[in-house]
Image 1 (cartoon, rainbow, N blue to C red):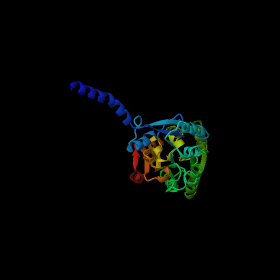
Image 2: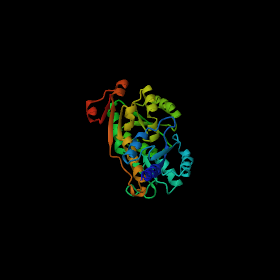
Image 3: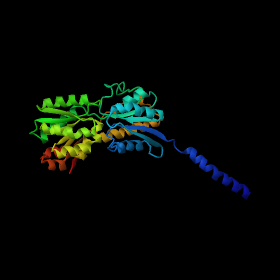
Image 4: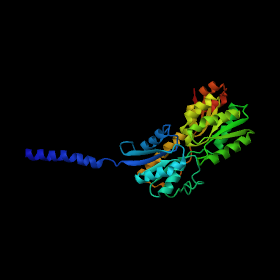
Length: 324
């Protein structure tokens, strides 16, 4: 009897690791293409990982990433996408430019984007409510109203300013909409705008030199994720040249005088949630494109002090965050 019991127990001990192995969750693979500068860390990583965690996905446990970077150059995307498709990733995540390139390469692998470009007008999805196909995502663009508020901030913080500079990257899909909105707001306030372009990190310093030579009193930053990836570098150059930055909220932490718009990190977190929902079986075609819901006004008193700018108490009272 004892011998049988021992053998039975031994058999259970031997079989247990086999059962345990079959119960391990399948490792899903996400292809992540970052359009930001290769020299900079993926600053949205923590946000989309938070969203994935909320859906029960944890790196190293049941999800892994294949990372690639395009360094702000859209012409690199086809080869990067082809590599991810060949590796048979479960999902592809990136900006609108990444999603467009991926959509051309595959109709079966789900694609999730986070972008400031209008996904309907560029042909990425059929509509916001019913994306169709294998693509959906999150829109970060706050629109003309947010741009107008930035120009209001120029008027409120820097009343002597008559000319505003704008940094743009013509390689990005949202550049035309950006420029149109800024021109409209600038004209309303009777100001002038000087637009300079930068398509790579090395272009930033010459662009700043042009803006200084044009005697601009404030600097707007094109609303795209490439510039967001370089915001610490942009902020340092602007501070060195005494140029106050007014931009999207993520710039507030890196030295912008003031910022307003949709929360970039909240939008990226929502993208992480969408990735988790799709990995659990939902279809991109059934997930509507999410619109911005969280807006932030950030004022940086440290930057104001360094630039010698007086911030009205009324503006501080309205701010969602004050950096000191």
